[in-house]
Length: 159
Image (cartoon, rainbow, N blue to C red; front, side, top):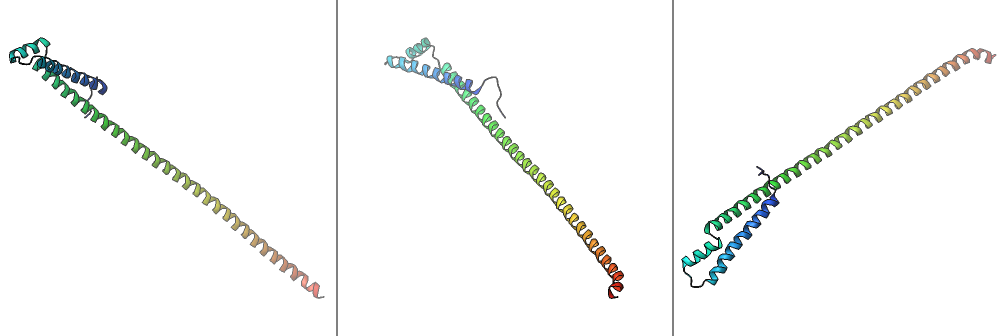
């Protein structure tokens, strides 16, 4: 879609402006000499124009050149605008994907951190349970020791 060529848009614009100036020069020459030739015949006016080097072909050619250059500038401008918009959309999409990737990475990191914390809490609770079980076992052992000692000592205490 983009118009490609060796010339930059600024070069085309400059050429377009030069052509417009050339057309104005032709017009000024014709108008200026025609005003000075009040009462001149068509043949005299035509001869004067020919002497000036201004012909309808020159003017038509210059007008066509201006139209062509305007069209080229417009096409290049539209192509540039489309390219800029596409680049902006690509940058936005890249930025959005980058933001999504960062958020996803952060989520995964937080999930691993939470999982690690849950395992740490589970292990700590398991240790508490193990200590409690050891304590219960120790108390049971102590009770049984006390009962057996009291059973052994009971007959001696009553005597």
